[in-house]
Image (cartoon, rainbow, N blue to C red; front, side, top):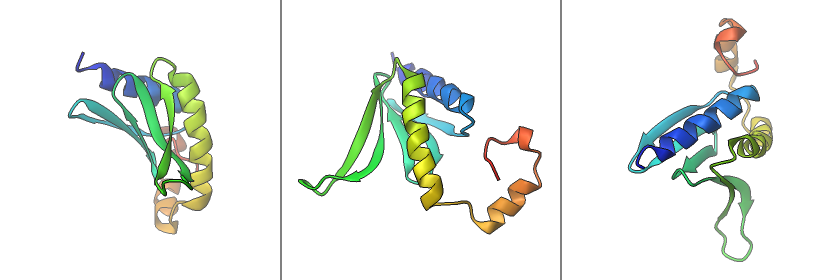
Length: 113
């Protein structure tokens, strides 16, 4: 039971990789995190995925989160890819990172330079 979050996170990681999005997984305390980009970390308890949608609730002033069942990582990955595209425009790679990445063969990394 305690491995469900890690399994769900790894299935999401694979679905994101299939879309050309690099990410990494961190696990502990009964949850797993999939770190995708600045302001895009997906949480899972093994039952569902959640991430910040980019919107703030007008009623509460709090961040609104998007959710997807963990048994559908492909749909979650597509939705996360849409958010990733928004954030790539808002937070592009720095010139230094772009330069370093340009020196690494593209087959070794999942980030477009």
